[in-house]
Length: 615
Ligand code: G6P
Image (cartoon, rainbow, N blue to C red):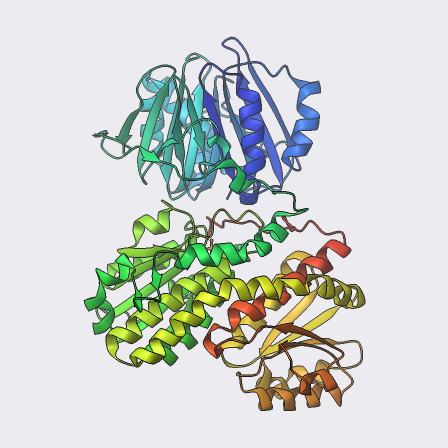
């Protein structure tokens, strides 16, 4: 997956594109490039590395004037990250230039065909094949660029969001989409192209999100023409009004986006239940659930599909749905589910969880479930994302943009949305009394304040981080609702500090991981009062007698664990089913501080990307 940006209008394209690329680095950051067109010359500069490396290089390499341009930040799929494989790519004549997010799966056979026809290739990329295919079609039939792009794309198997321009057409950019996101910002006689709206949010609030298999011809000063790639039918595009603002996507005084996003959790959780949780009236209002209540109530089971952190939120939800609403739940890695020939029927409800709403495996799992007749409900953060559009109904998390690659506020807001759904279903099914229901609503309403309180442990967590930052391994243990939190805590540490960490159900420790414990091994144990507390305390004893170092996450005022553990980090008391929303906080902070102390790139860890739109 990669980030793409383009501009055509009356302003200088370069500053718009370079700033836009910086905002899209969450999509990939192993190389970057820009092509600018001043009406006479195409000026191209690209480099391995980050957008900041491109910025340092570009001004000494090319003149940056021109009111048309395209730019790219890459997460390599075909070909190692280097200058040559970086986008934009030019056609053999040098007339056509392209940026591409996605994968052309049949690039090899297309490339062989083009080589036979005399084309040569500089890079190892599938994208260079595509631009030469477009050129070949254009030349052999003497076509306009839009038509050539359309014919070429009909020969392509794979996924793409592309922007192409032609030296012979100084007032036109052609874009197309299948499987990767593409937004077009509409300004005053100017157009912006990007993987999401963040690169153009300060210029316009009006945007078109292209649907799969659509393309658009964007001409300076003219109306955009959108058409179907398959059959040329013209489409009347829907112009959305964007709610995002620039402040939401900037760091707001924090050193890293991840830290900002950790500290945003009280307000993000509040935003998630605002208008939905009405404790005075003892009701939960969620249109997507209400409109489909019959389907939820008739469901034999709920299947949750997701990847990464969203999968962990799904695991927490399994405990919550089963406990509160008594509905059997299965939680599946989307990537396994889609390839396993799973048994799905019309009586299943599938819940797909995705922060970005663009994860390729989750999207494919949704398509599979839909094809088997299941009702599919989406829990996404990014409004208007592909998954939000592909599902039958859904509920947004409203966490605001999450830029740090390691997911934090998306996780807690996903759990919040799923808790609201479970509570609503529990009430509808009668598995909870009205007083229990009301009690849960009132307690959920206190969570933002309690997260705020949990965040006060930050300075202490920093001290603990200093002590353990050089450890080579970590073990994370939790039980019940907090077992998935142990998995998530371990994932956070791995992702951003590159320290090996494992999450385990506390009781399973004795079936293997206990062999790893010695005086070098920090063990983070979630031991809150209401979660099988005595059992977890016994597990802590077992760790202590093997000299492991214990970092306990405990309920405020706890004394028993304090006696056994090397360090305790307190979180406020709450209902057991809501405790993951609090126990997660110190684990996020621990991984953050360790990564900072080890000088790692917290917001853009190596080899990862925020949005994984490839299989
Ligand atoms: C990537 C990200 C993770 C995220 C996962 C699923 O691996 O680095 O942070 O949890 O994708 O993403 P989604 O957008 O579907 O929640």
